[in-house]
Image (tube, rainbow, N blue to C red; front, side):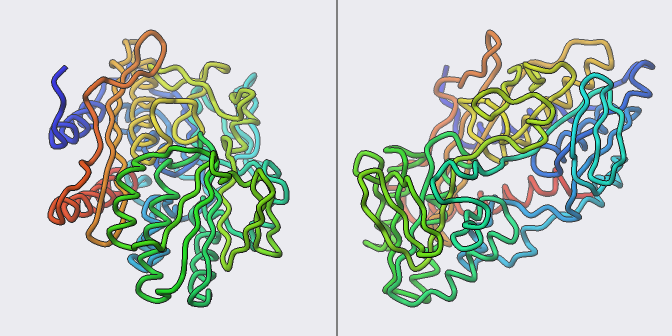
Length: 426
């Protein structure tokens, strides 16, 4: 297979989205069908909007406790002072205008026998198909000493919201010359490049306001997404400000003392921080467990062709909660999965075969305001598994010039605006 250019790859992604967005004629048996979608983020809001496009007769209800969804993508820009908080927020009026009923409540429980979803308000919603996009939950206690109370002192900031704002306040209050320590988990976790972009953008903030500060990354693994690109960018923009320590060099954190803002590594080394950012191991959101779709890993195994649960028929799961390797847990991937699940459900109601499963991902990371890098991949369903299409993706080249890096930064910002409009816009 001939390698795709970056423009070709993004064109293929756009074509895939356009194909899934084509109107579909739903037969009479689908006219009164009820689909409930839980979670108003990249995966769930996409699935709700897309299903209403494909099957206008179907009753689509989106359940989401928040009136505005704040995105983890680009939250690192907020930490660096490159974006204000509200630029990350998205409301649901666009989905309401598209015909989606939005219920502001927490999904509390699932009865798979009678097919109902119980909400925090006590209301029960009946469903013919249920789509879950619950995101991730922290595995409290997986790191000794790190629980919800500890997160109020040493924030994870791995869900955009009060934790992100807390971490920013701590960074702003930190003395110049202090050390920002980040504990990074082993795979799988939400957004593989996220911690390393965060390090870069915190370094950008420090370079402007606290030039004597240092950043120490303690990692539970020896490799990470776009490693060579990140390390080249860190050195070029920030010199020796960022130090990364991998697992084999005693980088794995085993114990946290949030009150002392310190961590202990595998071999007993105690590291003290001025600001401590602990990203703990994660699992699928709680409602996935209540629905019985998680396995022993804490994540949700799904069918590659449709993202229907492998454990409970009629329930589809998209986004970070899924077992979908080699696809990463990213916003772009959640959007693609939401579209594919919607297409599969609409096809089932219409009594026809689902479209071939094809997925595209691009993850943009900002190393500095005019310094972007990216990784892209193309995937398909094959033999019941998700496989990566060889030579169809790729990463930004090493040693690229300033114009190329600036263009990547621009593409990343354009991607965010475009996908936000696609999901939440009117």
